[in-house]
Image 1 (tube, helix red, strand yellow):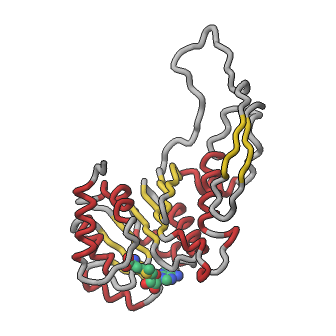
Image 2: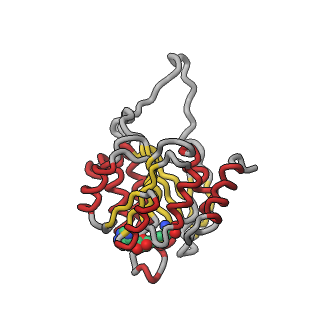
Image 3: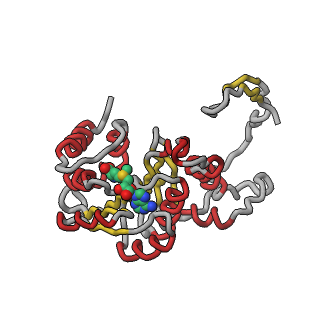
Length: 264
Ligand SMILES: C[S@@+](CC[C@H](N)C(=O)[O-])C[C@H]1O[C@@H](n2cnc3c(N)ncnc32)[C@H](O)[C@@H]1O
């Protein structure tokens, strides 16, 4: 049962009533509702990369309310015309780290960067990394149309696709907190990535959208804690389970059946 039906329907209405064209996959509206509904009627700053016909700027304003600061970013200088309608618009290349270095400090704190721009993997990576680097508060960086990582006309991004980057990032957000069992973990050498992702609280994968939840200024030390002293500790059977099974590895490109098994 959908919980946020009112907000969802309001978003669909804002999409349909936008005075200018906008194009979205139809499964996005539920995802947007789940991710952004907490910003409705707030003084939020919502940045969308990719303006095209301007319709989505109007959709966000109608749905989020007039207190929201809606900012569009596009490489096409024609997008400047939307300034007349009260939107902030910046012209530049999202694939250029220098562009972000210039505009993000100027914009200041933001609540969302939604990337619906060029959709090339290197642009998505650059946008995400800049957003993580320059964000000052808890916020969301949401990359949409991640299916482009599979698409022929976005060149063969292959091993360096945005999807692969995001999947590797999930290893980093796990590894960055793995120091509570000395001697158990491998040597995590990539301090640059571990530092970059230290404020990434979670990464949410949806169909064609990946959301990075940033929590700034939260303590990063993860430790094991007990609620009380443990006397007469029972034996932990963690390595005793030695069953095995065959699984179809969840790789959409191949049909690999792999044996997985327990034991040390
Ligand atoms: C899919 S459209 C945006 C659609 C719009 N968000 C909507 O919902 O209707 C993509 C836009 O990204 C812009 N774009 C393409 N490459 C870009 C880049 N490198 N930097 C910034 N914007 C770019 C294009 O000019 C185009 O307007």
